[in-house]
Length: 213
Image 1 (tube, rainbow, N blue to C red):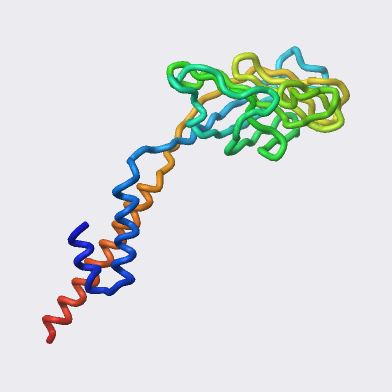
Image 2: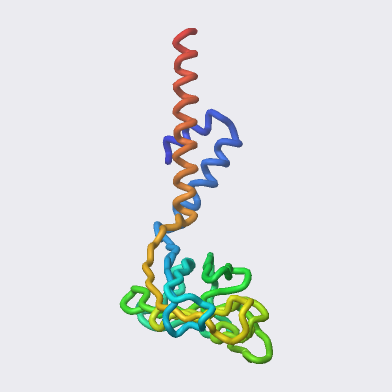
């Protein structure tokens, strides 16, 4: 860092200020990393479905959340069917009905020893027939698509076309993947590295000019 500051001194006050602004976060921020967990799942309709939901029809989906939602100690359940949880991404399609963060979200997440072991999703509807449990019941009765899904017990959906509640039922298969998200300290290190490369190029250029003189 001292070497870079010395080099920056030759470039004037602007460069000195830039190096100093990068040095501060490096000195104060840790190397901690947050992580985004993505769950990929499929649901296959069973004989419990109404006749107009063909048995064996497969739906696919995924959702993502920040792993800071994990409870202290790594074991326990977070969220509820009333308010749900922050949902970074969600995409689900089955029987021609499609859902995203605009009309669905994570209701609950359950962890055991730091691993996700169960979860619940639902459509974010709130008509009077469902009360406050907007993520926990199927209530459109064919007026609009809605669904509820639990990793351990399966899914249920109404496509918004057929009358009846929860006409399509299915079993769920799922897996998780984690993607690291760099903290500000990482970004600061990257910027500092780029600055160092620029200073080295500048120094090499001035050395060449000096040799020609």
